[in-house]
Image (cartoon, rainbow, N blue to C red; front, side, top):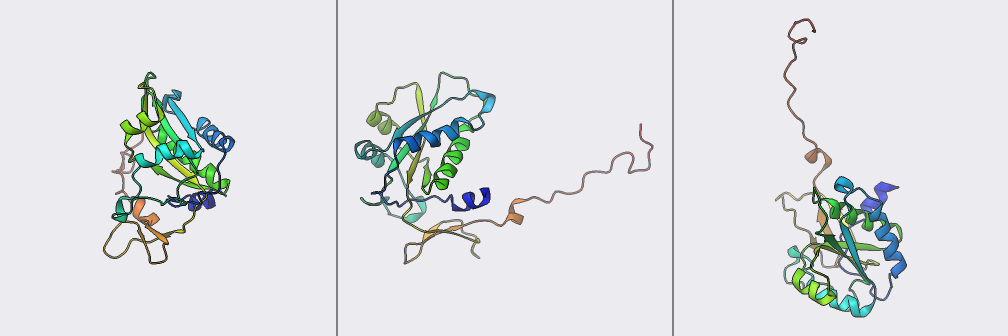
Length: 205
């Protein structure tokens, strides 16, 4: 069910690095993105696929992993992603709204969860150095990096604590806790609309 996929689709930051994600799997995930919505149907996104140790090692140093986890530098060797998808935009194409990469990333990660994998959307990227490391032509703007692999950590959803903090955290067992607002917190109850002419006793025209 879709809800189950969404619930399992957490931001995983530690992986079973020894379990490979092959190139055909990555191609299949990008195909889900290809079939997803695109603003104005301009389809400006392009992708770089990486599932070999050498290319992965070029990508990893250019990523920042978890702002709320203090000095944690990211996953150690052996817990790093088995694969990456670098999401680019072809700047030669006119693009009316910059939302495509979020839609594409969600489609890719839901597809990864369905296949028994997981991932993390990383927007904090040293884009100039990554461009240089991968020899990405100037016409392509680096938007996101998706880290992928088989998760090696448990991520649980919790309610917002009394102090209202939204910061995720890890307990002494390494379980990753993510506070989420309630559904009622998100759905606005707007005041009633002003009464129309008919409600005021006037005949409809």
